[in-house]
Image (tube, rainbow, N blue to C red):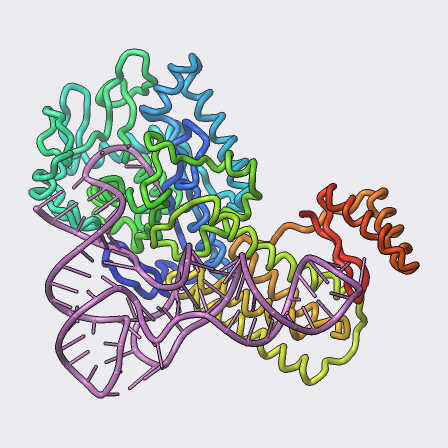
Length: 464
RNA sequence: GGCGACAUAGCCAAGUGGUAAGGCAGAGGACUGCAAAUCCUUUACUCCCCGGUUCAAAUCCGGGUGUCGCCUCCA
């Protein structure tokens, strides 16, 4: 399979360090609030990549951190008059709730910064020994000018960055691109002991430390949002490679941004959507489908009209799934007909198209198209006369492919007894051609959110 | 100033040299007691514009226009 590597700006054939095994690290959230749809994109995309790698038979070790000490958390804790840990623990819990709604699997490890202070200190010590740091009164900085390949990921060079209008004006730094590895404690802030005095880690060092601890000095894939390319990932490279002298990650993957009305989503523009808010109006599976319906590197626009479109298309897939289940329950085993044998061959073709799309830098839009192709074919080729065997094969392939995308995994609940009784009563009324009563019951159920469909194999229902 | 992305039907969106996927919405038809679901037909002589390369370009090259992002915490 091929993946687009930000480091080389090319799609490259994916080769793992250890055959059959993938070690991947994805930058996780700073837990000071509910996460928004912009955060949701990398969670969903890289969860999908992980699922696909596993589908292709790789043993994947996936690490995604929680940043649980940071300026924003400290500020939030002060505002609410609680501890930093209260804030971070709360929003870690909330993260898992929303992630579950989005069908994002738990990582193998979700390390927290506060639990890895000693690993962080160790790396800073190694950098210090390698002459890549300087200490200004208890603040330890990375001396980016001493790391010759600084800027290789973002293709920035130091001189041009200095020409930029918005570089840090911290006067104690030797160069504007230098960044804090260790920050001296300020009054009232959480702090840990270190060789440089009481303080806390800088913003970038955590990912280097935790990636190395759980995955080793060189990993296969490191991923995150496009905005992390500079400076965050650039700094991670400087830290990790500066300490070990080895490549930090072989493939750097970055997802594109989400805009609202073609503008960046931001609190000041008032176009900010948390996943929690959207979950009140939509099943979060719709959000997942929305994210997967475009290529992960392209910017996408977000809006309620688009969610409505996505909701309708997802319904089409659920209809197909439930139709297949309904047909399977109402047919018998019999030998495959010639047409069914042909359909079986087609099924294989859809699977191939899916795999080909996913192999091409996880082209989920094309992969979804393959599923829609399959669904149309199944809808027109299969019916109440079909053999159980071919229905089962279609159903199983549909579930196999959609599971890779994390879609279509919800099953229908059972109906309440009194609703079942109403459905039965309606069937009786229909037999007696009492259409008025039949329609009345159908309307009643619709008001309760139950939609009925009359099929040659009996009544089907679904929740609206 | 530096780095980068995007521009394909009413909307969303694939497609990186061989003659425009898929979804949503719309229209017409079939099926149905009526619906729903589903199926069929239909909606881009053309892919922002202008040049060039080629037998052949949405796809490559050059130029232009427009939009957006990063260079500061940020997915």
